[in-house]
Every structure is written in structure tokens, then in C-alpha cells.
Length: 393
Image 1 (cartoon, one colour):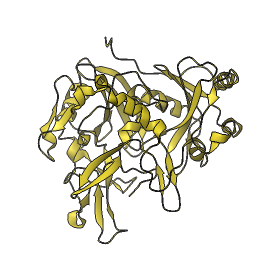
Image 2 (cartoon, rainbow, N blue to C red; image 1 turned 180 degrees about the vertical axis):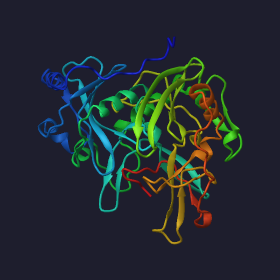
Image 3 (cartoon, rainbow, N blue to C red; image 1 turned 90 degrees about the horizontal axis):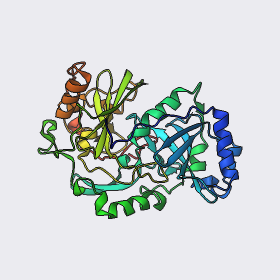
Image 4 (tube, rainbow, N blue to C red; image 1 turned 45 degrees about the horizontal axis):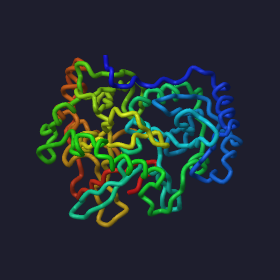
């Protein structure tokens, strides 16, 4: 019995029309709709233009009211209205965009950029790294990941859709628009994280990585800080599944907590690959974006998805190899998205993936891993945080 780990959320069984009536009654009682985007001066336009919620999910102290699923050429998403605590007069209701990334993780977009030169969904707070001797900032996508406890519920709501409507307007109505060079989120996203991070009691493993590689570019050198390793014997808190064309069919999902119950992991098992979503705490505090304000420090190479960016950018001279797969481990390009390559060669050598296959899936690696194949003639630029919807390349 996982006494100190919350169960995963489930969508409400309340019929869609009743969810919509409940939400309108909430606003009529004095709750205040506060969009950050173009609708901020006339919030009522969201309901007038058909963005009334039809689904409801409750997690911790937050209620997520969701429209039916929408999509544009870049992402599949919900317009969501987040309400924290017990609603009363003056309670803010925050419209957000919850979208599904190609790594199959649901996220809450921080802002957006759209112009003749840029088309980009904000990926949250910034980090710095060094590439080819140059320090650069990049968006830490994990800061926008929605709680692991709500990921399956969002999948269930998505599957309920008879069809997914094309929608090119919601992003600008709901999200704050930034200039072309605005990589950083706005204060409403970042400030709750700053406050939470300033409290030493919130720092996981005292701010030190819970998982790291002792040798550069060696997947087998992965080590966990004792207590923070996934507990495959008694820590599988949830099992579910979905389908993905990119990953070749059925994808099983496993939420696994650590031995010390302080952090948790989401393992994906597709027909050919196993990968892990960035770790999260088991804390119950959420921001108005529906995300946790406290990070779990860990080496990001532990969380390479099954397919990741690996392509030659020939728009520059000389061409440059852009890759988010550890050097030398990129396999064949995806048939669905040629800008992404198979990362199995890296993933299958991670000790934690081997242990997961053995102890949870009950079998060894599936299809043989193809030999790494990368075009190194152009050089390599490994800049974390790049992502479509759209990508900042």
C-alpha cells in the first residue's frame, strides 16, 4: 500500500452538459476568468466562441475544466480552466493550454511566439548549458510537464473525442504572446517556482542530482542516489496504455515511485523502445498552470525519449548537425518525422531501463537495436529544449 503517494486522477463521470452548466454557475457566483492572452480584456469571448468546458478532472486542490480536444498543425491540445481550492467570490479561474508533446507527455504551455520568422510554444523556465564552449540558455521543458498523476486522465478524455476539431485561434486567445526573442516565461509562470525554490525544505536531495552519469557519454555509468531509484518491486503506482503512430502502436505507461517515496518516474514501453519522462516530486502543490513548482534535479540524458531531434540544419553555412541524442547513439530516422532519430542505442544501455524490462515487463529488450548512424561531418550542436510546436532552431 503506497500510503504516502497520491492515486492518479480520473476524469469525472459528470455528463458534458452538466460540466458546462457547473462552470457557468461558478462564474455567475463571482469567480473571475483571467486569461493571459488576447481574451484578457474580454474574457467572456472564450465562452462565446465555443470554449465551454465539457470535462472535469480533480487533482489535489485543483480542478481542471477541459474543453473537447482541439488541434492545429503543430499540437493537439485542450483549453483548460484551472480553479484552485474551494471557489468563492473573486476566486481566479485561469485558462491554460494543455498539449501533448511528441514524447507523449502532457504539458501546460507557458506562452507563445508567432510571427513571420517564429512559431513556438513556450517551454517554461530557463536553464544554461555550454555548447562548443559557448554558454547558452534553453527552455527546460520539464518545468511545463503536468503532474504524472493526471497524465492518464488526459489520455482518457482525449480518447473520448468522436473527432478532434481544427482550431487556430485558441492559442492566441489564451496564452500571452511574446516577441520573437522571448524565450523566458512571464512572471505568472516563473514566480511561484522562485518562491518554492527559495525554501530549502523544498529542495529534493538538497538540490543535488538524484541520478547522474559518472562517465561522460556512457549510459552504463548511470547511478542513483540511494533511495531515489525507482522501486520496481513495490512502487508501481499505476499502469495504463495509449497508442502512438510515431512509436508504432500500443504504448504502455507505468508510474513508478522511488524507494524513499520522495520522487516518481513515468516509464513508457512501446513496441521497440522504453524511455522515461523527467522525474517529479510526490508533493501536492501546483501552480496556476497546473504544474509542480519544485524540480527534481537529475541528468537530463536519463530522460531522452524514444525518438528525439537529430537532423542536419542546411539553412546555415556550413551545415550543422543538431542533435538531442547523446553523441554516437542516434539510430535511424523516424518514418513519421525524419527530423527525429531512434534513441534505442542509448536507452537500451541504461541500467534502469534493463531493470525495468526485467522486473516490470518481465522480458528483455524487444526488437534488436539498430547500429547508431549519425552524420558527424557537419559537426554537432546539442541544445536541449528545442521542440516542435514550433521549434526554435
